Image (cartoon, rainbow, N blue to C red; front, side, top):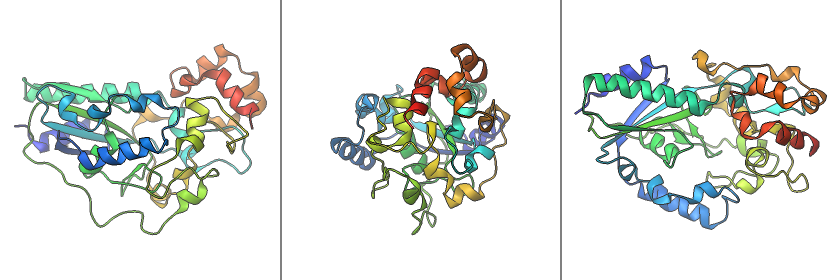
Length: 303
């Protein structure tokens, strides 16, 4: 059995801001809600969400002999997360300004696992970020990190919602497990709902990806006739910038998530004139490569 105290110390030393631990069990209620959301067509063209659904809500089938899930979170909130000047037409989601978090989070999780193996040599694990089939937001809520806000994201009392999540599914039990938070939440606040120019946020704290700016600028072709991009060329922070928890949250402290360039120095002409080589030199290690400069320029032209 692994000590929760040892887990906490190692996770914090690895650079994460928050950690919670829950049993690796089937999340039946969350699974049912997800199925309903899918049946209503809200996943649109995000076909990857339609795969491995049974595994997504049951960590015990993802790792042989899985007993526990260690859920870690780290803030990426930067000055750019506070919003752009009115009228800006080249806005980039603040998470995408740093090195691709999939790589960084995986490295940090592997560091945690290797440190744990020094204390528990028989430990087996698998590390996850949001690119793998694990319902990380659901496990984060079960682990007491925060709650699902109206914008469908995990909101935490101190760090708000501008967080990256990462999980270690392990084959060992832990001497103390966490429980969901109580006494906190969004209350009557609807700022995120009102901030979205396309009515993306649904009443049940989920989103319709058919109207989501982030989805349209990254995941599939942009149709400017159906959706207002509101100046966003990659991703969107609209529903997070206005959140009271994010407005009072401290800036990130882990330098691994520092922005690699200043997006406010680039106007539409600069982006449209940018070559692939210039794009790679500036943002080649960021998540923006998922779209590529040609797609970003197409987003700008669709404005």
